[in-house]
Image 1: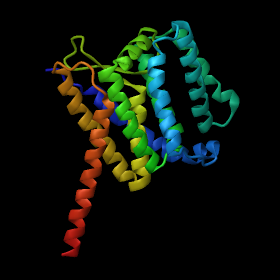
Image 2: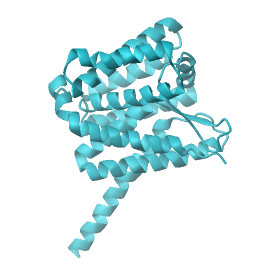
Image 3: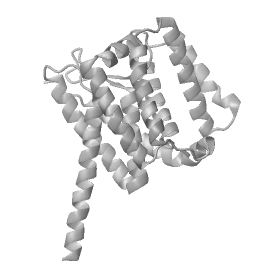
Image 4: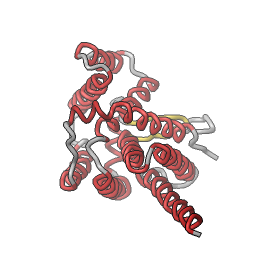
Length: 266
């Protein structure tokens, strides 16, 4: 039996880090965006653009794709560092270090390290652009798009493999148990998906529930992923795993509050 323990545990740690860092950097992020929030019309356009981009990536030449992703990573690293230390000469160091390592010293350890950093950075940086309503709209629409692009068109799987072949840190690759060549992969989009839900859950219901939701999402992800690894299904949208865990946490909170309220009333 193949068990996906490491990826689920790392996912929990990433979610915890996202919520913790967001609480520390929320004011800095808000200052950068000036309190701007996306509206539902923006969410529809964003999801459509993300769905189209998955297909377009198949047509982009390899070298241009590397340049495009490298530029995006450099910008994210620079902005994320600047939130900690608002000095340009310091903010330029991590991007330069990334480029140096990527082109000359790249391996799976650096791949995972920078993928985790990017996942956390994007979640913290963009979490402020959403509110509860737009988050619900986004996760609903992107889950539908993900299901279509993975199970119907297959474009997500092909695009991800193309990026992986180029060494681009678009996700996390970790071994599964037993250690006999079994590996699992989780994309940056899925990390952002979990991070956004964790941030907005914390904003609406408090840190305690935020951390509980992360734990439940990770546990449910572990269950689904382990089932997948031991079944004939090779590819399935991870967004379904994550949102299932989140919905379980939300429903459990609602039921618990109802039971507690009834006890107090009686």
